[in-house]
Structure formats: structure tokens, C-alpha cells
Length: 291
Ligand SMILES: [Zn+2]
Image (cartoon, rainbow, N blue to C red):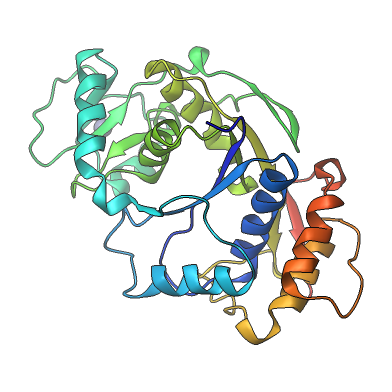
């Protein structure tokens, strides 16, 4: 086993956009510059949002940018039995409870008090949450953002995070922890939009007696209107015809040295690997993109 295992875990909800390519390249370069392996994992656990062929298209677009998974690509939608097995293990530890609150109700109770915790509700028609005491939430050191303390809040709902939704889909926050444990991932490079959920995920690693990976949260790419670059706000798909230029744009965003002109995509990546310095990435939550 290698000492460094990194991963890129896109959701197949549309074509790859610049924000995803930026996350993929940062993870790839950090893995390769540490002689590590880099995995692609398809996070299609929310099958209501998955778009047909999107996973294949994302894998193809990554390949055109010279980014290939070092091991077999796994799909979360094929791993439900495994997630269920872990769920049962957590139930035995009394770490989970059923919750009947609808999203609308949760918005209405501005001070949700974890009211379903004590109700011993039946499984039928209810979501499953991980019980989290605020005092138990760990802080952590982020490789880009520095020391992160859990955000204090009165709202327990913020903490008791959903493991399995009432429509029976496992949550992303839960399933990706199980995958990271099973794939022996040691380094996670992802967008800062998930930074505040990381202490909860760390608690899940602890519940499962697994050592947590190191986390690196990249500044989130936003447009001039302050919106995250995402498929939801129709961020344009990146063009495969301009793959090398796309990589150069990403290297600029990551504050890395500019490779020489007139070299191939693989030579560009090799240059970027040998010059990679993660400490040059700006220590901030957001980065405005104007191209
Ligand atoms: Zn509830």
C-alpha cells in the first residue's frame, strides 16, 4: 500500500466544469508530487440527481486532461449494501436515531432541540441522523486553511447530520466517509464549501475507529455575482478542445508557476507536478474567477 492515497469524487449531475477540474488537478498534482496514487470515485449515491452518461463523460473529459485513476473507479450506487452494514454497526453503538422532521419544519424551528433524539421513532418513513453533541465536535488542522474550530451554534439540527434520508438514499457526507475508509484514502483535497462539515465527518471516522485522512480545503471558485461555480447555477462545461489552456487556467488559480509554451498536456502536468507547492494556494474560503 502506498503512503499517500488521494481521490477525486465528482457527482455525475452534468458535465465537468472549471470548479471540478480545479479540484481534480489540485488533488492529482499533490498525489503525484508525493509519489502517491490518485483515485476517481463516482458519487452517484443520490440517484434522483444523477444524469445518464454524465459519469462516463466526466471520466472521458478527465482523461483528455491527462487525469487517470490509478485504480478501478468505484460507483457509490453499487455500494449500498456496504453503507447499510456500517449503518447497522452504528445503530448497535446507539449513535443514530430516527427523525421525522420535514425540511419545512426544520426551517420553522429556529431552535431545533434535537427533539427526535428521545422519541424512539420507528424506521418507517423517517430519516436517520447521527447524534452529535456540540462539545464532542473536534477541531482540526487544514493543510490550506489552517486551524479550524467547529462553529458554535444553538441549532442542534446543524449537528445531527442525516445519514440516510427518508427516501432511503444515504447522504453524501456519510457515504464518502465509508468510501474513504475502505479505499484507505490518506489525503482529501476538496472545495471549502464542505469545510464546516468536516468536524462531523471526523466524528464519524472516530465512531468507526478509523484514522482520519488529512484535509485540504481549496478556496471555492465563485463568479462575479458571488455564486459557486457549479452545475446548479449553470456554470459552463469546460471545452475538451482547449484542454491544455484549461490546465493553465487552473494552475493560475492554484497560484502555481506557469509551464513553458508549446509542450504537450502530459509534459504540462509533469512540469506542474515537479513545481507543485501546496503552500502557494491562497489561504481563503473564496476565489473570484473572471474567465
Ligand atoms: Zn426530527
